[in-house]
Length: 105
Image (cartoon, rainbow, N blue to C red; front, side):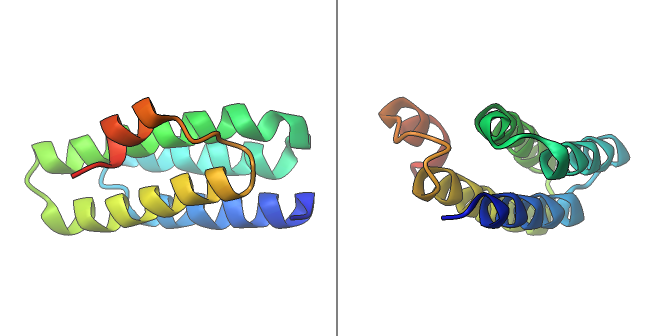
């Protein structure tokens, strides 16, 4: 997987999370993170991915708290794609604790 592909795919997933965000604050943070990802050196993508997953998690919880199941469903799907991208690209290891805590039913 080339570095350009990693950055492009990561940026696309952040754009999808941005579109699904329900508050201006989360949208602003997603947009800022997306700009950073597009400018970061490849070695900094792993920490950015961890930050994106944390932000996606917070966004999902916010949607659930407000009873917005449509937004939650979209955010959860993109979050799962973000996690899969992280594992497949080598930016995120397969952590059983992370899988159990965030993605299990």
